[in-house]
Amino acid sequence: MKINEIKTPEFLRRLTVVYGEEAALQQERFLKLAEAYEKDFKADADLRFFSAPGRTEVGGNHTDHNNGKVLAAAVNLDAVAAVEARNDGIICVKSEGYDEHKVDTSNFSIVDEEEGTSLALIRGICAKLKENGWVIGGFNASVTSSVLSGSGLSSSAAYEVLICAVINHLYNDGKIGAVEIAQVSQYAENVYFKKPCGLMDQTACSVGGFVKIDFENTNAPVIEKVDFDIAKHGYNLCIVDTGGNHADLTDDYAAIRVEMNSVAEFFGKKVLRQVDEKDVFENIGEIRTKTGDRAIERAIHFYNENKRVERLAAALATGCFDEFKAAIIESGNSSFMYNQNCFTLSAPESQPVALALCIAEELLKGKGAYRVHGGGFAGTIQAFVPVEETDAFVGAMKKVFGENSCYILKVRSHGGCEI
Picture (cartoon, helix red, strand yellow):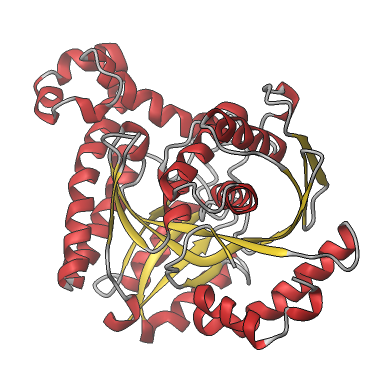
């Protein structure tokens, strides 16, 4: 597509499929993206456009990495790319505000110096797709994202799914399934980027919509779409970015998984999903001598979160919104008390997530619901806010955490895709 075709009714129609009533605003965004491509790479380009959404975790906090259950949803903040194929096997990505990244797809070796960078993600994705038998090729891409880094909306997963979507449609006729794309993305983040994430973020970004996911078999997770319209119940979904940075919290995230696994290992298993909850309770005295107390508390959180995911999904399916709100608050309390991921012990004086939850409780008690969002320790909270209370809620949060701290989100039905 040439740049002058972006303003046509046909392209607006294509945007409407993904963005709905926001399509006109997105048309201007894609025009600016095409202009960025011509500045980054070359003029008169023949472009293709791709998108991958961020995600919100509705229920199932820190359960996916132990083969648990989650309820998640893709949201209307996304990473987008303007792309042209190239025939030399080089992938060159220029993201807005960042240096250019260039990867030779003939080299799949792990490069230690790339750990924690987008280069590692791109290389890891290519390596795993090649191992899975898919075609890999080069391309130029200009990328911009409305999924803020460190916001708890999974900017890294959106980026991974975006790169997969490009390779999928440029070289594989769109035949790579959404679940495999999620698995490939997780592999890149675990093995090349060196962050021990679970599979929820990538799955929600790749599949789209509200999804209940059961990771008992991570090679074939059971995905169930849940039909739910928040607005019809008179509520808005708000995400509050408290300004905390996730960059130095890798050890905190990893410890949750390690400690949950240590309880499973007491029984000769790899993950908690393989261990009966009753066996844990009956052996707490002996387990704590091997794992410490916090590991057991986190294991109890895991089992109860799995049950809450089922409650949440059932409440949405039957329209029992009061039950849904109650389970959300229970989830948040469990994360705070037992999973203990609302602040880091390395900096106990800094507790922006805990403070945001305190404010949310004062504003919404008896009316809405609130919980830590995503990995925790820093970053964001999630709140379900009555429409008539939304302005006051947003204003109060902005007063504490800054003008750009509170987002009113919509659920997006499309996952990673070509526009």
